[in-house]
Length: 441
Image (cartoon, rainbow, N blue to C red; front, side, top):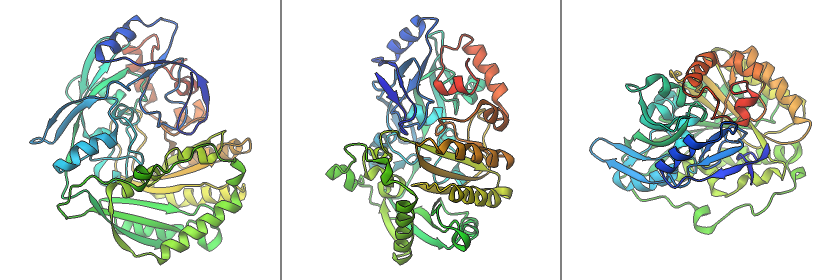
């Protein structure tokens, strides 16, 4: 079958394995041919090639809810359960996931493998900070439990380890209590990047914080943006928020011509969006779907970039150099005549002890670029800027980072390799990405 990530680049041919349960998963891994490599695959929402390999081990049927302890706010479920399905189960009971990425179709296994982050990392850390334990199938076929107390080194390598230590069978998660399923949103307008940073810092105690940037604005307007702050509403309403897109099936039925996305059309869209946000009310109440998953209103929105797909470029920079670095990045994008359809800025809190986790104290910027031949030289320029400011790229979004950049920017990669070699010396678990980055070949 043809396989690809959410960015639809790159594409490869792979064999899809769909174990019916945990025992079938163990049996397959134990009997796997020595020459074959495989990687776990959840909902296919990583953007690049981190979940692409000769064999893809799907968690599609590992989608069962195993236990919900409402007294302790703890959920145990299969790795294939999607975050959106957890919310449907938990919200009516006044419970919520502590960390949510920008897509609710992400699987639990994928969220752990990428150690995903949300709009509240500055206060609550990343997804794996709320994972109590994991059931992991090793290269031998053995099923082991790992947590902070049990097999802790394997736990730290698996959280954020991009599936390279084994295939997650199930996980036990901590949940938060919430007063309602709605979010009180407040928006702040920033006329340039410096103002946006000031708004973020001045509202560092806000539960949720994310800024949309106009990446094509220049001169005094460079980095003009809208910061969206959020708090859980105090209403006792726990209804499930059904989005417009879900009810009416809004979606992109086919790949649109990529020439429609160019600097001119994106500049017009950004200017229009920024102007519209300035006119809107500064405070409003939204259902959780509309606040956390705005892009999910349009199914298959990745087709908007055309049949060649797109590359998402996300990096994190220490706070002390973030303004300078991001200013240089935006200037470089404008200089090259490129535009990002979606540009998002967030603040991160302290890093964790997971060996390959992306998030660290500082600021993260996310950019989307349509795939075209002239893009890659720009991304190499951006790599140099990011590396010069002691930054790094997010593995779950990456599709082309060099081995040199990876090893310079992820200081714990050798510690990770020591653990991987201990549990998987023959590299049964490998992906196109891990081969490219020098982790498995």
